[in-house]
Amino acid sequence: MEAFFNSQSSSRSRWSYDTLKNFREISPVVQNHIKRVYFTLCCAVVAAAVGAFLHVLWNIGGFLTTLGSIGTMVWLLSTPPFEEQKRLSLLMASALFQGASIGPLIDLAIAIDPSLIFSAFVATSLAFGSFSAAALVARRREYIYLGGLLSSGLSILMWLHFASSIFGSSIALFKFELYFGLLVFVGYVIVDTQEIIEMAHFGDLDYVKHALTLFTDLAAIFVRILIIMLKNSGERNERKKKRRD
Image 1 (cartoon, rainbow, N blue to C red):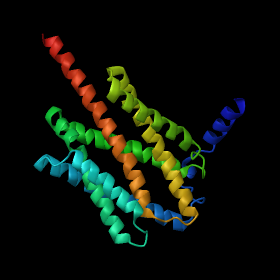
Image 2 (cartoon, helix red, strand yellow):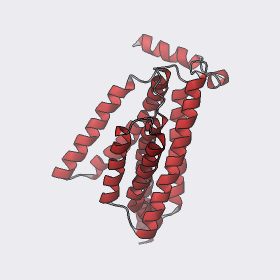
Image 3 (spheres, helix red, strand yellow):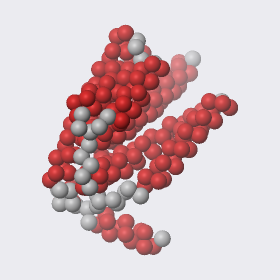
């Protein structure tokens, strides 16, 4: 236990402004790969925003768009890497369907407080950017060991969701799923970023697949942050009504 805290304090002492500029452990090829991954991720976010906007206009989001998103993901992952343009198109289609699937939640936010959408996006960007940057500047493979813990956490979430769908849910269980799920997917940002770097070092430069991995994390974080903000806003409005009465 003492060794653990000593290692943590020594790692903190190595952090400085020079650490943020230290990418010597990441080769130029891997750095270029990471740039392509994040650029592709930004394009996927734009496609998701278009999908959400299309839902607001024509109410297209729902079960079918969710199936479409999953189907295009599977199609993408089964397509050979050399078919780059096809895989990029499938990624954008999957992101668009994902955005349309989130559309009903966006509709709810517009009805309650439209500013919450922008606030949730900013909070998601800050969380994703901060933890992704932490993974980039950390030593190689430093956080990959967390993958097993996060997989266990994801399994717990799935079983809780399954149990609540059968036996019913409670407010306490819903809150736990919400906040614990947010913690799990924020952790996945760190682990997935380091795994992408590690795979790129071993020659896996499939930037489309890697962008899809990070986009999945980003979407999961955005949904949970927006739900938390909507819930808090609703509670504040209820308290205001009680005070008026």
